[in-house]
Length: 467
Ligand code: ARG
Image 1 (cartoon, rainbow, N blue to C red):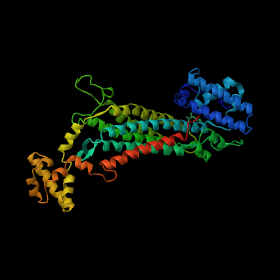
Image 2: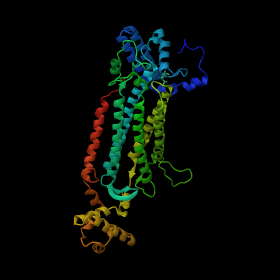
Image 3: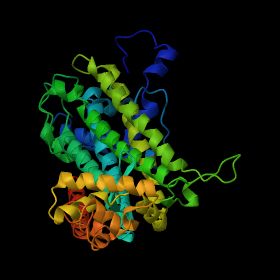
Image 4: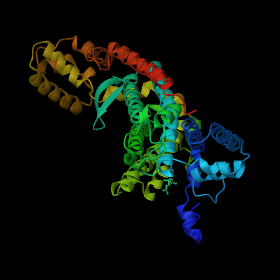
């Protein structure tokens, strides 16, 4: 490829070290689509003849078809996917293939391919995240009335429904979809035609190729176009947050399926046994998802570190962007492929949740609110209830079973109706403040999640595929 300037061949180790074909071959479809658009533009602008452009297009279409069927193998002697496609084209259509690289560089080509590849992959991942949200929503719908303790500091705090708890995760994953689509929106401008770094003297039409390839516009500065990898960082950070959410959810699944909690039972298909302890049923999938979070964070930090000291414009360091982002995309996708069915098949155990909810004084706030309703200031009521909790602990009982005489001794405003007021069902169903765990708020949240999912359906129809 460098014939002319070089007399010697590249050292074998250096050649392997330099090559990116092993991983950037993933982008062959995007590379070929980009080349087809480029050739069409060269033909339209008279830089190539119409026949030349058409012959190149047909040659590229043949390469695409053969790569799809496996009739053509990736030639490991080529440095990267861009050189591979150009070499095969030239082998197949002769010297005309050498004209394809007119008014283009691998620097704008790789930036183009990566943007198109990520656009497609993020689209697929968004669909996977939506499937997860639907699965979590179905579990919520099936467990509307199931009460469990809500925790702060992992101490039993106030009663909530299992559905309300699950819906919190729907909100997180909806934001993840939003972040990914923001990143794609900013990324969806074409660098093609920026060439090595400075643009070109040929009468190219960048707007035309951008439109052919489904971009919303072009990168306005040629140096920025070939040196920008912000879009990788944005997507990696959105993926890191997806993993943060999956990891927190996994942690809860691990806790919930422990003997200490036993709030859920995971399906056999998503658990493993122990090689030595016959009683064990381990939540390996959730643990692995939690563990793989570190790996995706590593991809983000690695990419930021690669970029931080780079002078403008393109530097070979940037070849390191791909393995990191490919790994992150694949890791998140593989995590979702087990996490979603694990949630679908997870069996909640409402009796155990109810038993835990009955023991932790989680209705103490409601008891204080009861006294406030009778006219006591909140701080005074808080103190009285604190004393009653201590009294229960010394008697080995709970608030709902403490005799009325004990209550009256603490504050004469207590009446028989307090027992109804502090039942866990009453505590939950009264919390209808917007976003609270009560039934009215629940309906509103479900409507919100469904509406957001439908809105992402419409959005994802818009940008279209690369081809
Ligand atoms: N394989 C390279 C990469 O992934 C493509 C761009 C190479 N450009 C160059 N001037 N060496 O970044």
